[in-house]
Structure formats: C-alpha cells, structure tokens
Image (cartoon, rainbow, N blue to C red; front, side, top):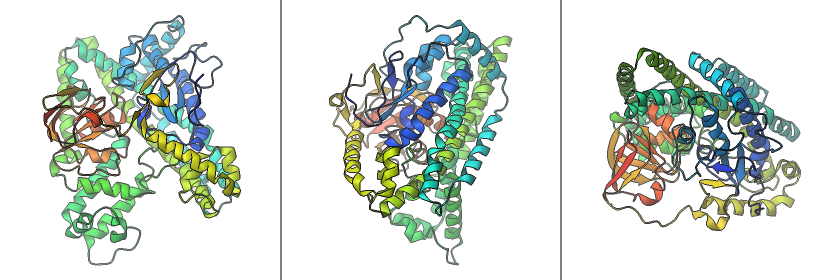
Length: 578
C-alpha cells in the first residue's frame, strides 16, 4: 500500500491495473483541485461507465465492488484506465488492442496486453456488433442539441451575485448529477467515433493507401473546437490592418486591455478600433468558457482573463495570409476528396460501400465529439462563475488574495471556510505549496498497479541531452503537410514568447488554449497525444502540419533549431542547431 500523495487521490483498480496520462492529460494537464474532484470526479467515473454500458462493452463482472476504475487521481494528476479501454479492442468485432492504444494514448511504454480469463465476452461482442451497425447507419446526432438546451436551462437557473451563500452553494453541489449525464453523452459520442475511424483505417490499409489516412480524416468542417482559433485569426487580421491597433499591440500584451479600454466605450473617430472592440467582446461572449485547463473548475478562462486571448492575437497578427484557416481548410477539403476517390477506386464494390459509410460516420462523430465537449465546457463555466463568486466572498472575509485558493479544500471544509476563512489559511497554504511542488514534476505517463513514488518522477524543467543536427524523431502523424522553420519551445500557451512567422511550435501537450497559436506557426510538434487527441482533431481542421507523441520533444529539440516536420509520416528532423 503506497502513501497517499494528494488529498484527492483515489485507490487504483485491482482488476484493471494499467493507467495512462494519454488523452486525459490534455484536459487535466495540471494538479486537480480537491473541490473540483469531489464535485465531478466520481460523477465522471459513473458517466463513463454509463457510456460503456450504452456502447455495449460492459460484462457483468467488469466492475465488481470497485468505486474507481475508469478514472483516478494519483499524485494530484488525473489518469485514464488503459486496461479497460483495451477491452473495446478485445471485444469489438474486428478490433485490436493496438488500434485502441493508438487512437487514445499514442506512443507510450504501456505494458503489452496479456489475455486473461473473462476479457472476451460473447455477449459484449454481440452488443458491440449491433452498436457498430447503428453507428455506421447514423446520419445525425439529435441528442447533442438536447444537451445544448439542458445547458441553457442550467445557465438560466444559475443564481446571480445577489444570491445568498447558501443558494450559490446549493446550486454548485447540485451540478454533479447533471454533469454525469452530459459527460455520458460526450464519452459515448467519442467511442462511437472510433467505429468509423477504425473501419476507414482498415479499408484504406487494405487498398494499399494507409498513407492517405490523415488526409481522409482531415478538413471535415464544422469542428467546434476550431472555431475560437478561426475567430481569433480574423481579429488578428483586424490588428494587422490597423495602424492604431498595431501600435497598441507593439507596446506589449501587458496593459493592452487597459490601453484599448476593452471594457469601456470607444471614442468616435477610429472605426477600426471600434470594430475590434466589438468583435472581441463578441468573441468573449461566445467563447469565454474556453481556455487552459478548462475541465478544472478553479481556473481562469478567456472570459475571466482576456489577456490570454490577446496574447494569441498578438502572435497571429504577424502571420501572413498563407495561414488563413479558411484557405487551408479549402485545400484540405480538396485533398480529402481526391484521397477519398483514390481509395474508393482501389476497393471492390462491397468494401467501397463500407468505406463510404465508415467515412461518413467518422466525420459525423468526430464533429459530434467536439460539439459535445463544447457543451460540457459551457456547463462547467456556468458552475465555475458561481464558484468564483463564493470564493471571492471568502477572500473579502479574510481568505487568501487568490480566490481560487479556496478550492484546495473539500466541500465540507469549504462550507465552514465560507463563514470563517481564518482557521483554514494555514491548511490552504500547505496544500498550495504541495500542489506547486507536484506541478514542478512530470508524473509517470503510464503505470501498472501502483504509481511510482515522487522520487522517481522527473522535473518538469530539466536539462536533457538535446539532439544534434541530422537527428530524426518519430511521432504519430496528426495532420498532413510539410513545413520547415525554427523550433520555438513553448511551455505555457499564455506566454508564446518569440513564436512568430516561419516558426514551428513545440509544445508539451495541447488543450483549446493552445490552438490559436497553431495558426501563428508553420507546424506543430507535441510531446504526447494520439489520433483522438485535441491537437490532432483541431490541426486537421485548421490545416496545420502536426505531429504528436514525439516523446520529450520539448526537452530534446533545441529552441531555435531549424527543423522539418512531415505531418503525413510523423517525422521531425533537426536540420540545423541554433
């Protein structure tokens, strides 16, 4: 029995022992606050189990008496159970463990799958077969519109700043079951998306065109997670076309909101500034729920910290028109049509019929996955604003200056903290210090049984032997295309540093706060990721050459080195040292 590192840590599963940061690491990249996990953690576990049952995967002995299997917090970081997701590959007709690993986790050092008694289930295989037929025949996902209406009702019911502490807290605590249902739909849509994508992969390989896979699944349009980046691009064009806005941005992002008076009236006489302010306000109204670490309730989004979005605009305004996502999407769509016809011609009539259905399904559910995620994030933000009001009140009553520090408490502690913060100050300070220490370390990407002790974790900022010119690193193809540029290693999306025209963005992991920076770069290289990762889905929509799962790219690729990126083969080559 290992010592509990973080107060929100969960026991690992006994039956399903392999856990990974793959996939979940991009939605919970930082240590998770105890208050967030107590409210939504087990609801997410239950929602995921609900989705597994709906998908047809679950056998009667799978979960037993264990409360935590699918998800878990270990050493303050969120992990996903790889052992159980592999059962989709074991039980689904035509599935494989290797295909599931690739779609969800990318390249990792996960232990190889070892068959066990009970893993195969005829009942689950029959149910999954029915699910496959249903998914391949789908032409719409009407329940996702129902989810949007549920979130609209949630927002309408949210108490405002005039509400009492008790009313705000009651609303906050009641969110758990609602989140479970929304999350169930998101996960179910995600797994349905693997059906078409997997069949497209199999048929393209059968046709001898596996090199066309990234092209076939790119440029699909209507991907909601890409919309913020597209909107920020247009704002960047406004800045580039305006001498007044350019001058304001040239003075630096710090203090930019005040210089432009983004929260105030626009004086007459400068229609370009007025149009920017109007469009930026509309951007925040529409996408203010998005930002870094957005599944965490105790985090600042673009709406709460607009300077993060301004930093992205500042980089995009320097890019030329070749980075226009609309033009790139048109090119991707054209290449996608050509690749589709090429694969179809190489297939027999029956396989061609299956290919058409699979590609339509993969497109539909890939769009649906991002739409359902956006809906959940909007619901999260409704609750986040209620929580922030409570945390602000506690700060005014003597709590820590940073209102979010109150979320280092569990719900029972938080109730008392609202009435009298003073007795909790030392406890909060200790937990904050512990979280900062954990955030300075990289948790093991994969573990089996028990997470390794902290002494075996590596520092986040560490000296590593950087690769020399001529070295080629292999990752997973994300979005097709080639590019050559100077590597810019960026560890924080809100601080893109010197990233500019002609550069290649090298990032540790990406969530929606990173994707606007994609448009400022020639290509994107990511330490971790997989076929189903956010970086891949959005880069394919924006038309940015992308390679993911390049292990330790941020540590081994020298900042400023000249690199070439091939998004179709997953190769990143260092051409010249800085």
